[in-house]
Amino acid sequence: MRESFLEYIQHNVLVGDGAMGTMIYARGVPLSQSYDELNLSHPEIISSIHEEYVRAGAQALETNSFTANRTRLARFGLENKIEEINARAVALACQAAGEAAYVLASVGPVRDREVDDLSDDDARLIYAEQIQALLAASPDAVIFETFLRLHELELAVIEGRRLTTLPIIAQLTTDEDGFTHDGQHLVPAFRKLRVCGADVVGINCAKGPAGIIHAMEQVPLDDGLLLSAFPNAGLPMFNEGRYIYLSTPDYFGESARKLRDQGVRLIGGCCGTEPDHIRAIALALRDLAPLTVKAHVRLTPRVVAKQPRKIQPPQQPEFLKTVKHRPTFIVELDPPRDLQFEKIITGAAELKHAGADAITMADSSLGITRMSNMALGHLVQQETGLLPIIHLACRDRNLIGLQSELMGLHALGLHCVLALTGDPAKFGDQPEATSVYDLNSFNLVSMIKRMNQGVTFSGRTIDPPARFTIGVAFNPNVDRLSTQVSRLRRKVELGADFVMTQPIFDWKRAREINEVLNEFDIPVFVGVMPLVSGRNANFLHNEVPGIEIPERVRKRMFKFEDERARREGLTVAAEIVESLLDYFKGIYLITPFMRYEMCVELMERFHKPKAMPRKRVAVEQVS
Image 1: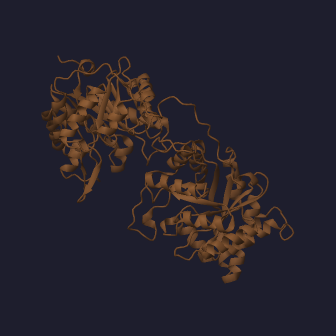
Image 2: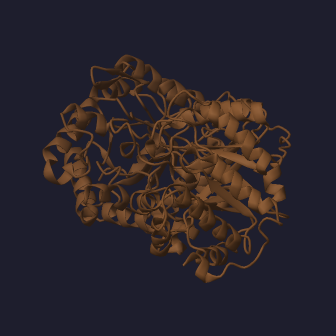
Image 3: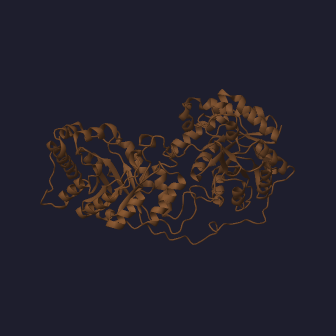
């Protein structure tokens, strides 16, 4: 009987396999298809890939189950085939491995950008479900791989150790300095993972061999430490519709020897690697014993112990101070759809004169192309002195672009942002445009908060720390407010500083919103939007997401036309503001069709008590 996986790796360097996804794609399977489901529909494809890696010299095969969890399979309607897909993944790998290779049951993260709001308890259940399905088919070990965040990997490892005594391999994805996406360094992270129950710890994916070698140079070979590394084949190049990875097999072989020299025991390949890369690794490592002592451990400046930086909290903007004592108005004034921005500057000046405390500028809301709110916000602040709150949507920028935009905003002195997921591009005026969504609003709040702590999304230090004030959205126009409250609670936990709501058109909502938001100790600005006509009211109610207008208000608007309708819209808005001020001092006025003069008039009513004394609005007024 052969040695167990853990017994073998104690005394030997083990050759892992290469990329499964790369090989499947090379066989003509589109990325839009579930690669895990191929275990059932096209097992011959998976078997042939495993067999190629064994012939190339792989001594450990990863199962084709990286995304075979409930959240990922549900996108293809396959959530009822979790057990079948995972069990078959192990069976196919075992059949190809025979006595020549160990079988590692592959598990990837269940939380990604689209399902990031899963609770820890839900994530544990999803991990347990997949792990149990894999264990039922008797693999030799479990490998958790491509985890960007330490906390997520800790959850998975703890759940895996609860369910099995098999060896557990836990692999993070880090930058070349050894930092995860949540800013954790691999040296303490590896120690934490071993405490959680991991037998082997390591890095996979990343940018290529050089980055992983660079990161591994920092890892001291503590007693009993077993390391793994599965680098990508370098950075990909897009060529004639395909991504081509540039690292040659010879280079991969040289890199494998360097990884071994850092004490790594299990060495394979990730994205872009093929059987030729694994063959080169096997040849390079032939007859080499594992390294147990390192002569030198390199520490980057960020790892060497330093005095912690004193990070001052961002200075609170004036409108968040005044809202504690008096009615405070934020007014939305959207950028134009053409190049004529002068009206925005004029409007901002008049709004400020009428008592606006800040102006907020949307980020091409509803997917409709508009002028850059960063550029226009800078002009408004420069020309009028009115504070701009810049909406920042995840739709149009990837992770790089969002951080670049934030740094640009900071450089221009625009330190107040509203973090949004953003309306899908296909609903706007450019339906052929692509929505990006590298992040959602939760991730964005977290990323901005980390920038305030002097750390980028990738864990790189920025100096000085940013000074952003973070706003978030809340939609009160839903049947189940509890869901929206749960989402807001998470945003506040992540670091939100204030809340802005969708517009309400019913005075009764004021009391309901106050009741459900009473637990939050941050300012709330409730949305109010003056209507201009019955047709406007009908459109908003029926075609704009997140807006609900009671039938009685729509009927009321249809009684009037033209200027009289506009006056009635202002009256309705004033009544709603009056109701809100019994509970909230923060009012968010949303300007209809660039008619900022309506918001000017509305604010003047409340800044001039003699013109409109405060009083409780009777139900009949809005019914």
